[in-house]
Image (cartoon, rainbow, N blue to C red; front, side, top):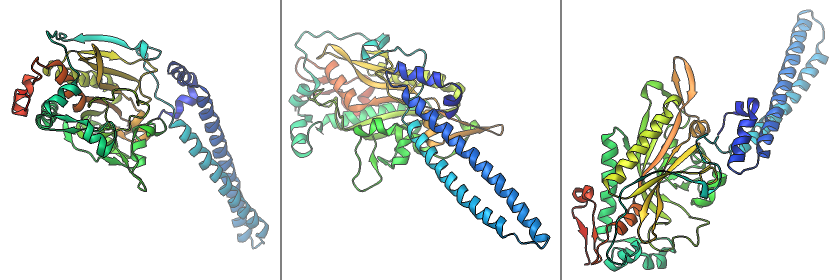
Length: 421
C-alpha cells in the first residue's frame, strides 16, 4: 500500500506510475476525494467536541451557581448524537478510501522499461547453449519414456496440470531443494517452512488480492487460502510488529509447496510440469532498512545466479516492463532458463523490490533512535523445482534417452544420471 501522503502532496507521481503501467488515473482522484472528505469529517468532529466542551463548562458553572442547566444538558445530548453520526461517517469514508488505496499498485522504478512484455529488456546472458547431435525431446516426453512423470493418471484423479513424480525424479526434486537451502544457509539465511494456508488479512498484507485472487485457491467455509508462494507467508511473519533496527536485515529462506489456479493460461504449457497447479519452491525473503533495499536486491539476484551457474543451466536476466510486472514490486528481474525443445528462454525465477508497499499493508515497522519507520521487503524465487527439473531434463538429455545430473547435485541425489528402468 502506498503512503497516503503521496496522494496529498504528489498525486502526479502516482498518476505517472499508473500511466506507465497502462492503468487508469481516475482511481488516484478517487483516493484523494475520499481522503479530503474524511479529513473534513475529522474537522467537523473536532469542532463538535470543542462546542460540547464549552457547553459542559457552562453546565458546571450553572450547577455551582445553583441555577438550572436543563437546556444546556439537552444541548450536550444533541452534541453526543451528532458526534456519533460524524464519527460513523468518518470511519465509513476512511474504510472506503483504504479499500481503494489497497488496490493501487506500487510506484514503478525509473529504470523499468515502459510497455507490454515486448518491451522487456535482457541485461545479461550466461552459459553456453548446448548443441545436440540428435533430435531433442521436451521434458514431458523424456520423463514419460523414463517412467518418472505421469500426467495422464494425475489428470484422471485430479484434473489437468497435476502430475505424479516417480522414482529418481522424486529424489532429484528433494536434491534441488537441499542444495538451494544449503547454499542460502551458508549465506546466513534463516530456514523457514511456513504455513501452507493463510487468513485473508495476512494474505492481503502481501498482495493486492483483487488482482491475485483468481490465481489462488480458497478453502470453502474457512477464512483460509492456499498459498501461491512462500513469499506471502514469510511477509506475514512479522505482521503488526515493530522490529529493532539492529536486527535488520532479516533474511528468510522459505521452503513450501505452492498452489495456483493458473487462470487465464488454459492454452499454455499443457504438457509436463512447467506450468502446474502445485509445485515446490525455495524463496528468498528480506526485511531491511529503506536505504539498504537495492543492495539487498543485488544480493538476492547474485544468490539466484549462483544457483543456476552451479546447475550449469544457460540463462538470461530480463528486466520486466511495466505492463508485464506485478502490482506489488517497483522493479522485477526475471531469470529465464534455456529450453532446447522450444529453442527459447523461459521464466524460472523472479527477483523483486517491493519497497515499503507490503510493510504498510502488514504494519511492519522498525525503530531506530526513538523513530518508527516501515521496513522494506524484497523477494526472490531462489528455485522453483518443477520448472528447474524440466529445464535440467532438457539441457542434460542424452541420445539414449537418459538424463545426466548436474555435478553439484550428485551428493544430494545419490546418483549421477537417470536411466531407463
